[in-house]
Image 1 (cartoon, one colour):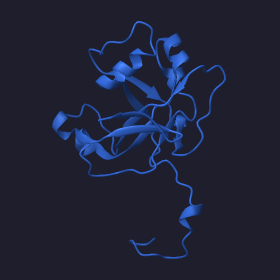
Image 2: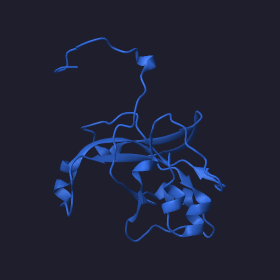
Image 3: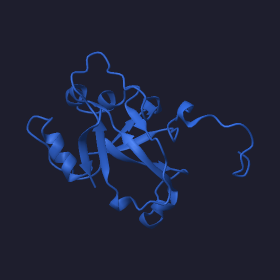
Image 4: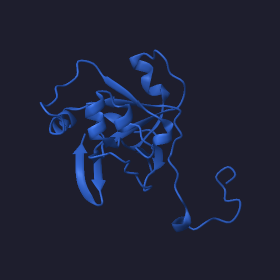
Length: 168
């Protein structure tokens, strides 16, 4: 494509393989980030969970990223593997100590994100690197959307056609 004009033969859409819509250098996640998820997580953690006093941050490695539809590998030793539907925010330029009013100026777009979690390792370790950082544990996409108002988007998760999560 040159300037939006077709410049040669096109592959059939059915033969195209969609890649993840971003290649992050780091993936910063916020745990227990909405009330429904805290209530849902309480069923997986003995004694339940309370809302954190401040954002609970964790990282996933870039090697965890796969495209939508790619297989999620079930690592040896994992007893419970859960999907977690999230809104992925693609940061388009380096950001450090950004003011609230200019925060959205750094957002290049939004995408679907599956925060795959190995619950037994997450509970056992007390921190979430192993339980959430395996290769294939960060499916992204299939699209990146720009110009959305992120405060009013529905987020759903389906596994083999069955709805597992839905929220806003």
